[in-house]
Length: 428
RNA sequence: GGAGAGGUGGCUGAGUGGUCGAUAGCACUUCAUUGCUAAUGAAGCGUUCGGGUCAAACUGAACCGCAGGUUCGAAUCCUGUCCUCUCCGCCA
Image 1 (cartoon, rainbow, N blue to C red):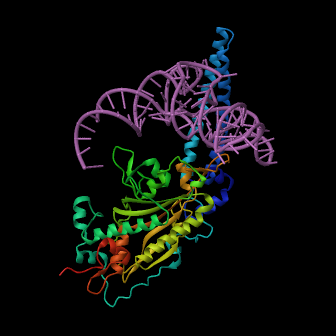
Image 2: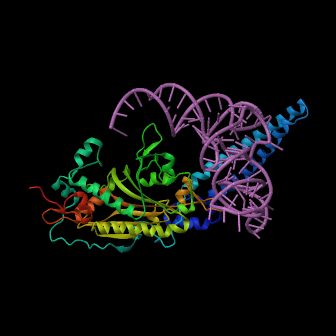
Image 3: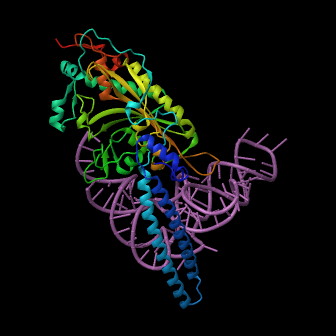
């Protein structure tokens, strides 16, 4: 959520930003309602003050008659105050609704453009795109060859979009998790495993809209709980309502959770295999920072993502996301797109990680603040998130890039300690 | 899941209808004082929204888990709800 005062004071900048993002937002309407709300707020406050004054007089009223008179006056003042307050609350609710739909301001250097066509490639990973002297197989075929994936059983048990990992895929899964978590702990991140469900208010705070028509979120019937779509939700929600001491920041967490996504509306662009699934496991980075720290930490998260995928020996490119392709809370977002030889005709880039600086947009909604010792008042922290490893897509990249002509899959060196072998060979 | 107890300021802990935003202690900050690494004394010490100011000072409102209700007036009474603790049951 954007700061209301900022919207009122900079309507042109906000509108310009909405336009760059391709979002229509009722900025003028919000400003008009806010002016009305201020009037009602002052009115209610003034009436309340008078009512309080009257109440205090009742205690020391000279006679029973005077007391009754004052009581009546008090009653009437409260009624007027309640009416003003009720009018105020309605306005407040309307404003909040509008305010929630205004996206975060975008970083001045973020490429301006309507969609992912305008995304700007800013760098490439160390691993070159593999030049196969054979026709590479996609991960579904490789999975079949090595008995790694069972989509049919997944569909039987939970429906299309669910799957079982088997055999070495399970070891790869755990290896990817261990590798990522260990590396991040070395870098000062606190490891956390999180709930896989969260309250609706937490989802809202992070910027997800469960129970809407186009929601990506599974909700649990007859409860206020939703399956999380990412640990970003739980890690951000972890400190909802908290006030940090400024010395505690930046606080860096690495969370491990399952992620559940309905992929509503994705039917048209349904992808093969593990690329777009309803459930996967993800190692997620999350950070709370002082405002002046967030830009640098965002670069750090991006570099960590590069380091991880370089270590996995997977070719990738880094993309600076265009304004029109940013999620509402993001101020700036980088995606890592891994080369996936089995995707499309002759291979395609496919998103494997993404890191966003959300500045104070989520913190305002979640009410996460910090306090500087010796200074009055509190300020909102900045929040950042970044994928370390999304297991399902990482498995695609590893399988497809490390295959050999005979179908053998070379296990990246950094994963070998946990997979327990140098390659996944074809069963005889 | 059953039974009981409780949720008050950074912490401990008073407060059962009217100067309670809230006693007291600890912690913290500032000042004073004492020749010894600390003691003593005084004052200050929450958040949010508004007015005010260059900025302060100052000032209005709200906040005692949360949401409602009763009342002229609620931390205090009533209802619901969430959470915590203890005991029992169940279980990984």
